[in-house]
Image 1 (cartoon, one colour):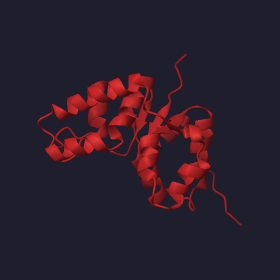
Image 2 (image 1 turned 180 degrees about the vertical axis):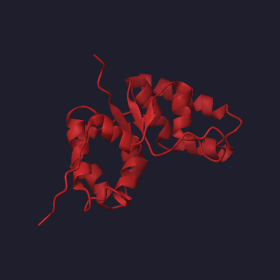
Image 3 (image 1 turned 45 degrees about the vertical axis):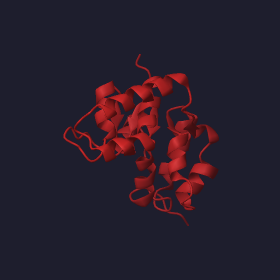
Image 4 (image 1 turned 120 degrees about the vertical axis):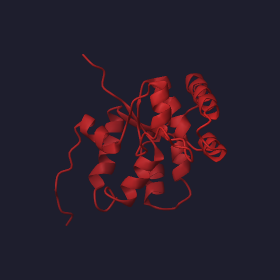
Length: 172
C-alpha cells in the first residue's frame, strides 16, 4: 500500500488563490479544504511562509492568523531541515547560471526552506513556479526540487491527488 502524500505549500499558492481563482468570496470551499486536509494531516506550510503573508492586513493575513490552525505553519528549526537547507543553499550558490541577485533572493525568501522541509520530512512541494533549466534571474523552486529529488506539483495537481471537489452552491 502506498503512503498518502503530504504537501507543503509555497506562499504563491495562497497568494494566487486569494488574488484569482479561489478568492475568499468566490470559492470559500478552497480555504475550507485546506483546513480539512490539514486536519487529515495532508496539507501544511511553514512559519516562514506565514511571515511572508504577514503585515498586509488583508483577508489572507487574517486567514493565516485567525482561521488556519496554529499547527498549519510548521517550524523549520529542526536539525534535519536546517541541514537540508544548507545543502540546497550551497548548491544554489555554486550554480554559475544564476545571477548574484537571484542567489541572494533565494537566501532570504521562504522558497529554500519550503523545499528543505519537504526533503527532510518526505513532503511534496506545492508551488506555481515551473521548472526553468535556463533560468538566470530567479532560482525556480522546481529546479532545486529536481536537483534534490523532491516531488513538486502545482495547486491543481495537489487538489486532484487529494480528491477535493468544489460543489456549486449559492450564498443566500
